[in-house]
Length: 297
Image (cartoon, rainbow, N blue to C red; front, side, top):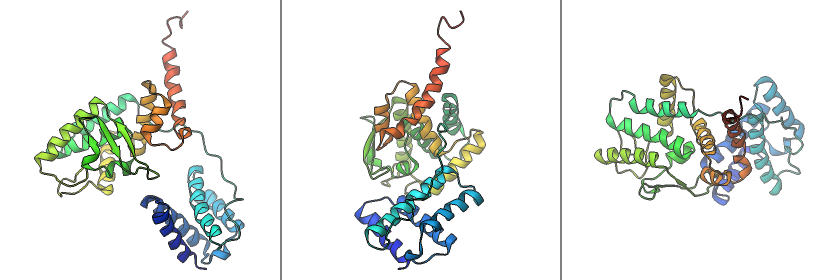
């Protein structure tokens, strides 16, 4: 049977029956289509473990796939092939016996406390042509740094999801379609309040919390990407959106937040995902131990 037909059925199942996000569905489609394009296979029964193994081998050898990339591709293909197996289109999962590279145990990249403050200051003081951009952009990067939201979560924020009076942000169907509430600190609430005043001044009534400048609609993915690139290049601070999320996690631990609370705030389904930040926090503690009063005896 044609893989193209099965892939469509699988994506419909994942979207409507399993409730997977659109980004997850896009990932399934991208990897499956890439595999079919590279291997030239069109029928599901022609897929073998050797074919899959060789595809991963060439990807790592010729395309220099990083271990994390290979593992992600393998995970997506495995889910699709498992569905094919469960529905009788395959006799076994061709991904099961494919060896995976070991994932480097590197600490997640983050900004220092000083660079975080410097970035927020730069974004606020940038010479914008419009007053609205100053407060909105400052609020966007402050939300990433002070609340640790993912990119999609920030763009999906609704006006009614942000409760400044009760100092909380409601994350509607974050990763894994899980809702959660993230508390906000006083600094963030002050920044968001200023943005809301500016939003009100321009009569923005769109349901999205972060609005576009020229239209009464939500700020979009491409707009955020362009803004991030611009601020990174002009500030000289090397950062990406996910790096700001890592920064939030590490700074919270360095400030004394317990791992369980941090896991809840970040929306991790498994606390083991959060423990990677403990290593980064330990580096901070190693520096602090030098302050021991008897250290120089």
